[in-house]
Length: 391
Image (cartoon, rainbow, N blue to C red; front, side, top):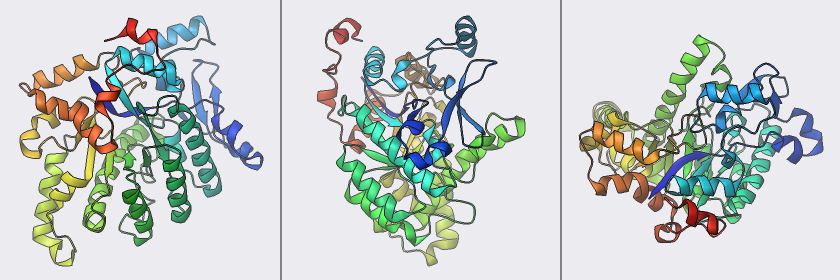
């Protein structure tokens, strides 16, 4: 049995053109098909191409297989339908022995980088409404994360409260503020307080920050190289800012997830934080514990395959790391998740069953309040299908 702490929806191409207010629809992100390779891409109002929506739902396929299928039929519905179809998703998860799924956006990651604040706010609300509908098919097994804009904290807090009441289980904000700003800013305090009181973990996901521009990713060597590195570096920096700024000292119940950045950096980050705290900045700080203690208590990290990070568990422990499948993205380990987990364990010389359970079920269930005994049974919406496809 597995629970994925970081999987994705793939938004319908007309999500924002259909759901935004009329006066914003001409500025809405939308899907456009490339006549050359027949892939669908997210395009903004200026015609700037973003994420490849086609490749975003091709778990278990190679690019060559995708291109061959589209060459034969440009209108083919290629890939895993579970990106936007809840029943198809539940069926695919059951096939892979994954009993619950934490859902992050795909195209929505770029919405968190929008400079048009009115458009960003409306896009977040429209996405959240759609996600509530999708997760309502089986709210115990499909755990949606609301997209929350943080340009206007008051409106962001209101949306956090609204989506919590509607059944979403956490939230995702930009991975890093714009250059020159930081999470030291006290303006974020109402957001941290609301998230803690609502038991809504706040996620930071790679490629959703205001410093590492996702629009450069996939454009050329230089842009892709830097975007790939910077997206992780800005997440590391944001986690350190939250700790050093005393956010977790003031809000001990707040939980933050650093998503899709792996766990291999954790041991080094702990050592650097504690060393620099003792050596340089402790006299300016309100912290009552070592930085590494907040890191372990308040910050959760997700990974797909990471033998280097798993090899460091003797330094870090395993209590705040969570496995993810990344379904339905092309990088996903689905539908061979157990095999990928076993390969990682073998590469580090074996992991005991208790540790594997923490990484793949226990930690994420504790964070989001998942009833493991209930979700271990097939989803009611699958009916007889689950019996046939049972793992």
